[in-house]
Image 1: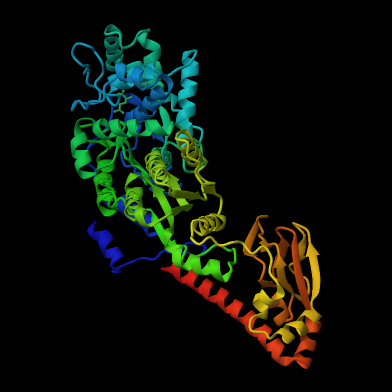
Image 2: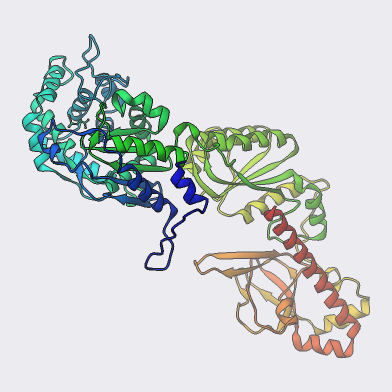
Length: 632
Ligand code: GLN
């Protein structure tokens, strides 16, 4: 960390600039401005003159820009001063050639070995005449020849479009610089003709050289370079526009040659001190990429002996050290994937269970485990999960994996999870996948992979039905088997617990039988509450309609349970819908009758209230337990 920056961070001499909205300036912004001020004092190096037009650059121009892989751009100094991209174009054209011709065809013509030679060296592999890599001019000219198109104009148009996708805006040529290089580029012409001689170019070298000169003359600024770099950092998609500039699987190939060859004969020093795939250009631009995280664009025209911007290199060194950006300092790969885990003994589905079922699930719940995963699921993130699941596999029947908070699941992680699910299935156990809506490709991969092995994977949109599925699985495999009561008699209803036969008789006199068809709305949210319902046969669900149009289930009730009691006790309005899931029979107890009962038979009313309270208490302690489990 620089001394000046350290002092600022430690509070000595912090200048908190208030901007017009009253918000403070970002410390990152302030740091970039400080870098501009500090490194402006470095006047080493010389502006390139071999392309006459470049000699006109103001040597004091100096801009810095950082773009994050989610599209935030910080910029300082002359970050909007345009300049020609020059050799920074090479990785992008290489990517286009890979996309147009395929990896094999490109590798057959252009190697991936660093040369240790200068950018304009005429170094071709002995024997084959292949350029050693696509970052030196020979390799870049060969890459330009591989851009597909019906005519030179078509090729240029395709190339410009791709560069514009990277930058997220329409880019243009600096015609003066193009003409200047085209008129003086004898050395590059020599390279082009050498390539023709060795059959690396199979056509007239002149149009290829022309395309190369034009790609080098694309006008950009630091803001563009940072976003182009961030697009590579972001797997080929511009983080601002969301548009893809290059196929994701080609990005590592582009970044590899940038790492080993991007800074020419100082590539080793660069990787040692900065540690980011990068590319420089003779106009003074430097572009660096930290995969997955950010892109950097710097512009300052004075060059060192390698042809790299002096200030650009110096600023990148400091940025890398201050913000720990060196590739080999990857933040400890994780952030293991597991965000929370629990068993069915501590969290249950929203289906209310009878006493006997509940007891069984309390006892057996540990045989069903739930793992919620989050973040980016790669090999290193998923490996600890796989390890845990292998370890517990002897003790469980079913494992639920919830993907609601997973950002990205790569193919290595998908393969591991599929393999694990198949191994579970082979020993009669299950892995249940939940909330894969945001990852349809992963879902397809898992389902198709399982189907190919004759396995049907349980996949659910939401955790609640998945938990219910697991509970049913545990209940089915229990001995002795529990039989679903289907219907209850009044004497067995929860509400009547502890009542003497004559009390039961009195209560029965106040109840009105009601029948509903499947899907009938029994209670409507917002209506005045006038009845308590005793469910005798069938099932009902308590639901609310969410603002997003979806319906959320609070609970599903079975015979022997009561509903609608809360609003009656506090004499309010209904706060949820209750709908019949099946044909339903119940008894309704009106508030008026309940009040009368208090006058004629207070003991019975007390018993009913106690029983209702017991249910509420059970629900509350369940909810508390869930909260505690999820908070831990
Ligand atoms: N157009 C320049 C050339 O071919 C690009 C070189 C560079 O930026 N290093 O000489």
